[in-house]
Length: 435
Image (cartoon, rainbow, N blue to C red; front, top):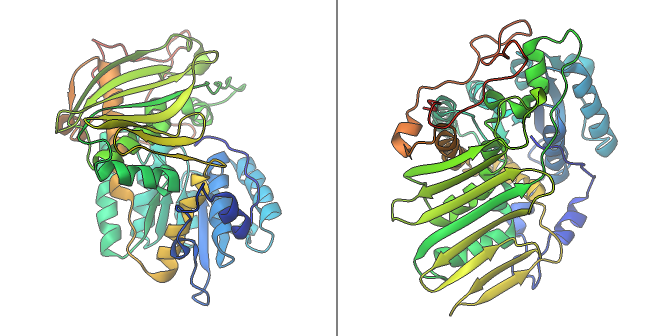
């Protein structure tokens, strides 16, 4: 749930600035259209932080028929700030009076009753719980990535996704690269054999760290961990799951499948304070696919180091680079091709057009399975780095290691507690059992 400054943008301006060089990849009209006269789409925002507020803004950008009618969060002040900002951006599409502002761990249930679709954007540990309830109540859903932090959570989301299909509910997942024209065109070319048989892949999210938060005086352990959620595995899944999933998902998309095993290494070089909870600051994972090809995956959060957020493919007839620092997609070899973007594509915005269109026009739409399996891929990578073991897909997927607390309440104990010095348990490869 990364924080992003969100600016209002008209649908016309957005489609104009999102166009790529050459015009061949312009967004199809059908994906950008909504069904006039088919009624309003009522939205409930569950999780009012930066990413949740951004997703609500972007969904409201799609059509004047989309209305925000309910909000839920565990923090009343955060809900109020989000509401104020969204009202300023969409004065005629936001109507969330006090009676539809819900606060607390069960607030999502109340907010869902008021809406047609839920934006589920709390810390990822809560995602399976909220999605299950949305499906139970017969609501469409947009799930921010990742959709879970552990294998039991992934299985819960997959089960709810099947029920959503039976109920004709539409489900989007926030893996936005799948909706960016540059990625769509490049992946199509690779799947059509532009580089021949793919033998190896690389993907990177090497970037800066987000800083941890100090404990407030008198703050309960549960409240502190939720406020500092990024640094606790049960809430974020670690940054390989919460962030690097984007790059891993691109490779899964290119391959049209998921790895069969993984092994790797990781640890903490700069995260050594109490505010840094328990997650690693770097992971390196080698994923193996069923055809024997390998993905070499790197993610790091450390200021002052080399940065790269990109994907790369090598095949028997050439290679491909996706989203390099020059905003370029390119293929080398006999099928040489390149595309340089005039501006970066706003995938956070683009991903909402097909979902809203599917709801308003009753089209099949369910991204939960691919989102769940890419989430599981990242979780398997974390299992490999935490344990230092070779991890097979089946044993990872069937793991019974449930990271969530048994009780959600401010005075309840979270699943990890600090020691007498205030430091939290950190995985130790070779000793930690991560399955």
